[in-house]
Length: 182
Image (cartoon, rainbow, N blue to C red; front, side, top):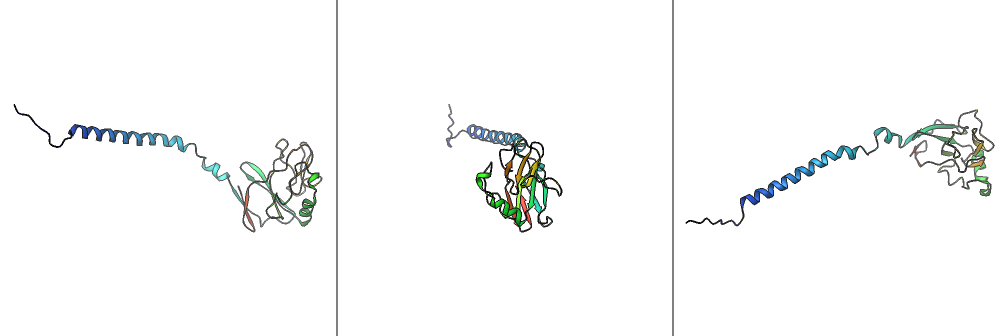
């Protein structure tokens, strides 16, 4: 009777089984990743949403004493090129006269430019006072005709039912004549 002895000490079937297990696992992981990618990618914001995340505005076309309205994230933003008188009025207000006390310096980066979200903090109306000839209320700022809120030249609530000042969005001056909101 003859007996065969293996000299290598390893069974070729075990090597093959290990390779097949490793290859099957790798293919399964890659396949699962490829199947999940569209789902994960669908949670990213769409390009139109990303485009609304910030807006650049050219300030050189806004004369002193005038204001414009731009849209940012679906909301109006008021940008006013304030006069020296408007700046002085805003700075001279005593904080104890304000419903939502906040200094003018805390609301602006450059004194001549006021940038606020143009949504009344009472019920979400759009205050008037941006276009020439619109009523600007009792404090030379904005007036919400829906319920009678009056905002001053710093966007602070001075009279009426609104509980808070007009919101100041995040913004950065890119140059002396352009600003990026958002």
